[in-house]
Image (cartoon, rainbow, N blue to C red):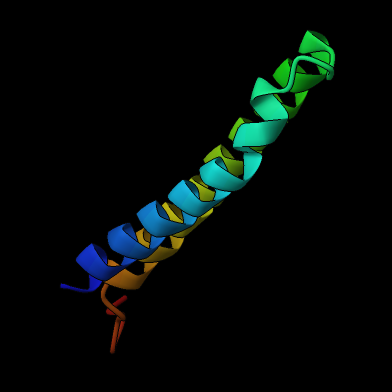
Length: 70
């Protein structure tokens, strides 16, 4: 259930960001190279954030050791 909440919140954030950036990406006055560059940078940041969240969730699922036998 916790994962479902994270997915819903992430989806809502992406939709709101996409709606806010819509005018920037469809504006013909802004050079195409700039729009592509901003899109690539935004996609890279989004990829890194998702990778960090997945890493934290994976570390959280690992059980803690109470004793280590030698």
